[in-house]
Length: 194
Image (cartoon, rainbow, N blue to C red; front, side, top):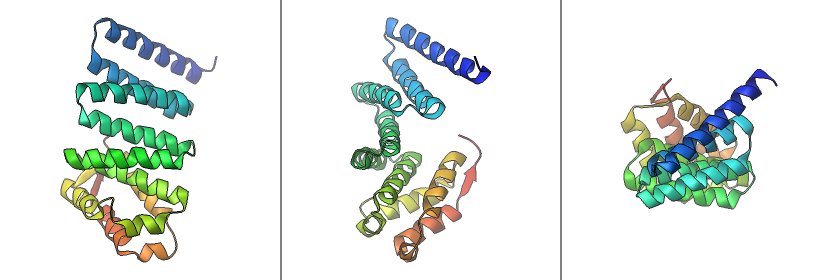
């Protein structure tokens, strides 16, 4: 077996062992974290969006049970990302919108930017960028404020947001909301941390 596949197989085995232990001791928080890790494992290591979504949904359900708004926000964005990759635009939009609403409510700036970026990617995939930037519903001012107030964001979020903005071409790049977000992104320090 190829060394990388062997590592992935071992990692999956360890995640399942961890999950068994957490179920046995009824550690709901630990179960949610492990389901999230399994979801990311399937999403990023295997490209298996269905298994990723199954695990993200289990994490989301536990987060709801525990009343963890942060956990719900993260899992809704993860579900949005998988839905978008699978071509389920409407479902992706619903997940990202719910995530953004929760992120605004909890004032979690990283989650706000992550969900907003997902909504922008979804609008790009659907060919609805013009409506997206005219909508103002996603809270462009709030997003720009979050980016500017935070002062520093993880590098992966910088990459994703910058890539999403760079894919946008044509007259929409003259839109005042597009320009405000683009300028906010250019004026913030993006770190190498995750």
